[in-house]
Image (cartoon, rainbow, N blue to C red; front, side):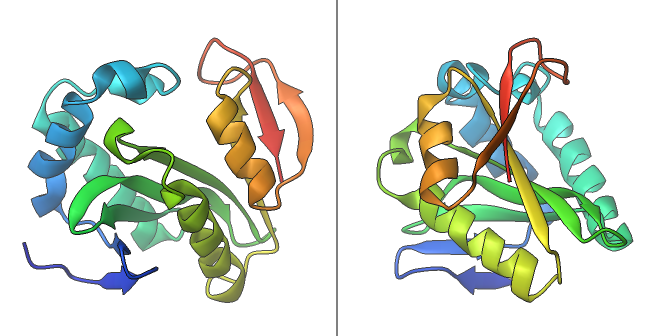
Length: 171
């Protein structure tokens, strides 16, 4: 597949700007790891077809055009491993929120922490943001560890959000 933009993060990790051509591949990766991803990510339940993934990508591309989103697909050793984004970008207040997911085949290899550090670099040095937040389910120990490892500080517990479980807010 040809990439509109491929940003090397390390020798093995690349960020790729998404296009609608990624819909099927992205769907297949999500679909093959529903049990793992669905533990903490409610979008998995609502992603039943590649058309759902296409609609997600369309929304993200619209958000990028309006300046509220920056999505990257994470490739590890040439394989689609997950996504990472900055969403809820508020240019007036210089804020944004980091979100990510990674297929279980790629966990415990430092991919997420490396990717979060890179997305922070993009946010602060290229987008001009001053503050990022990251929400992690209270029971998602790996994501809480990533937030802390990447220099985020726990700020609050969020009990009412899109999902029914409790989240920890980091910034």
